[in-house]
Image (cartoon, rainbow, N blue to C red; front, side, top):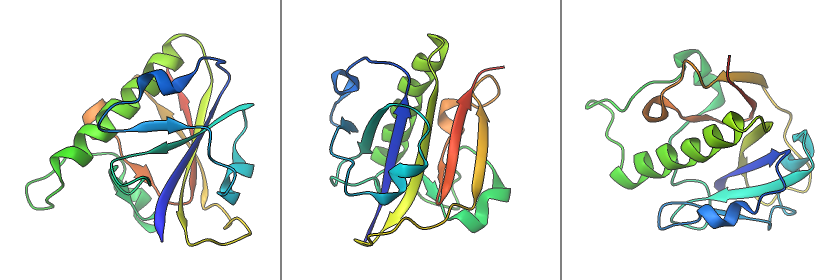
Length: 147
């Protein structure tokens, strides 16, 4: 059982050109039923160092009211997790700045055949969200905007 983050976008760009030691984009998303919640044609699986999405900053869906926030000393996070998340949101930000649309779903996958219902949709205004503060919330669809 792992987090799996699937992303969709209007860009036809091959996002795997951004792959590095911290994160990877892959077209192998079909095994994640939550991909059905994505709005745009070009879909990608976003993984980190373990071949899943557990290597990104996450909060469970019930913690969404905490919002975004920079890493805190009292809640230790791996340096690689922070860096993977920072770099991934940087790529998403660059797509939105090119007037592309981007959304994603962060799901806890346990080889289920049916998608879990989402808790809701969240608009993520990148104009007011710093890269270091960004984190994923389980079972939410993120719609990235810049206003």
